[in-house]
Length: 242
Image 1 (cartoon, one colour):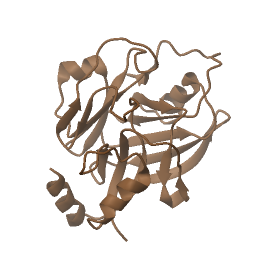
Image 2 (spheres, rainbow, N blue to C red):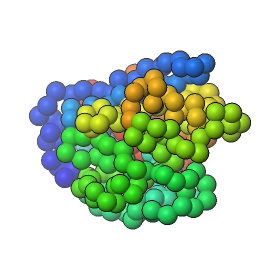
Image 3 (cartoon, rainbow, N blue to C red):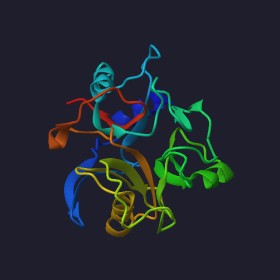
Image 4 (cartoon, one colour):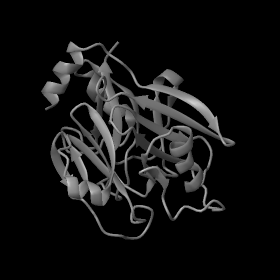
């Protein structure tokens, strides 16, 4: 599958995710828009030796050895201390972790949670039980939670007057799967504020929280490469090296 993706990468015009800084309702965000039918969007976790990549720079170095580069990237789901994913994770068609459908502690278990599925030139955010029911054939998938927006409605547990504020990142998709918008807040925000960004400002009917506090972004066009302790799953676009 990677060989096919590489052939398509060279056979089609190279596009890059478009990233921009915006302000909405008094908060600052960076938004990166990806068109999955025209860009190669992938998940990254382990290198060829089975070690977690951990950093954006490690992925970029690996890609450059093959004549490609990392176009944009952000952390893509919650993980354990050993960087293994907490929930469902599929990379290059291989399942690393099964779907977790039940409630549990922490944000991940705040149902409904969801799955980002990459397949057939499209990207879709599914609520987890719907994902299990429809069983889409995902080339790449990552489960996280909670859902931010479910069929146009904010998660029912989000409070307007919440005092829980963190830097947060997430992703929302259009109904046809042809546009995915990744967002990271540049200041601490509540879940309600973050979900409202996707529902009201971006008009995306389904959006998924990826993580908070550890949230990081790689956007070279904005001269941004957030650094910190090692990450688990990472999502990003792959483009030809300059």
